[in-house]
Amino acid sequence: MAVTPARTALYDRHVELRAKFAEFGGWEMPLQYEGVVNEHTAVREGVGLFDVSHLGKLSVRGPGARDFVDSCLTNALDKIEPGQAQYTLCCDETGGVVDDLIVYLRSDDELLLVPNAANSSELARRLTEAVPKGVEVRDDHRRYAILALQGPDCDGVLSSLWIPAGHSYMTFVDAEYNDIPITVCRTGYTGERGYELLVPWDDAGTVWDALLAGGEPRGIQACGLGARDTLRTEMGYPLHGQDLSMDISPLQGRSGWAVGWSKPTFWGRDALLAEKEAGPQRRLRGIRATGRGIPRPGMTVSANDTEVGQVTSGTFSPTLRQGIGLALLSSSISEGDEVSVDIRGRSETFEVVRPPFVKTSPS
Image 1: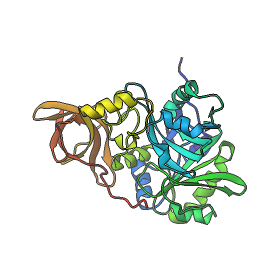
Image 2: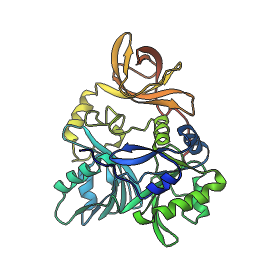
Image 3: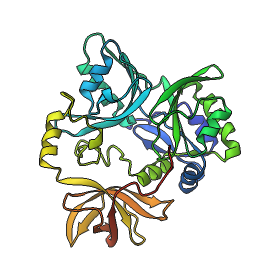
Image 4: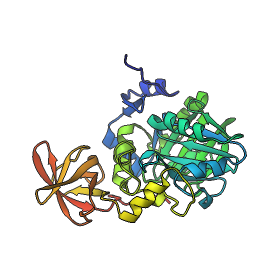
């Protein structure tokens, strides 16, 4: 029996804007409104607004909550202070990536975790099974909506609504809009300057409408997950399930920087230290077309007529007007090498490069 996808609090707004929908992580989400290229360009050059309320929200509270989360996830929470956020990973004992997520540190006794939609329940299960007495793990998935305002003009949109803007990257502040509590996070998944706003689920429509109205003089566009994917691919940001997974470790997926290697404990530590010592046999690399080829996930990559890996993410870059992608390649392949991608039986040449593929000014 098919499971009906969940819908966010903004579903009716998306219908009114004539969005095209697709299932993503168990949720029926807008894929595009006015077209992926137009929405992508709006974010790179102006401002765009995304509904990303499908992302999970897990609250961890109680004495020692920070130490507990730090003992489970890869990154070192002693690197940040209350009011800051951190990218981190949840691994299993083999070093595989259960999920990548953002942790928002409110205090030593209160944290908010924002995992990917499809993995939220699994992360909650693992944390709940390990949680010490006195610490609570609560699923707040439908307590908060998340709106992502992204692009060079985003500060102006927030300021027009008297919502705080201008704080440092990976920090957050609490505010209000017309008595609606909002947490304004300087985070995003596009590479542009941007914010992600946590708002009460039932108030999401009011804030969404206000942001679109406030951004109208700046040409704001509602954006779907299609543009979100092309934007993140241009930056070389990994997508869990493709570029990171239970079969693709942080070291293989270019996310070893998010591992606190000197920490005494975290899930998957022994396996990851062993892999680091031996050196990963494959690594995630950027590939850029030298011709007209557009790579797609699952396509075979070869060098000198020998298979050396597979494309994990691939798309047409609206900014560069050429095919780009991420590929999990043999460690024998280096930046600057040329490889071939089998695109429906046709061999296309790509250069191996270091992401990001485009330059942005997110500061």
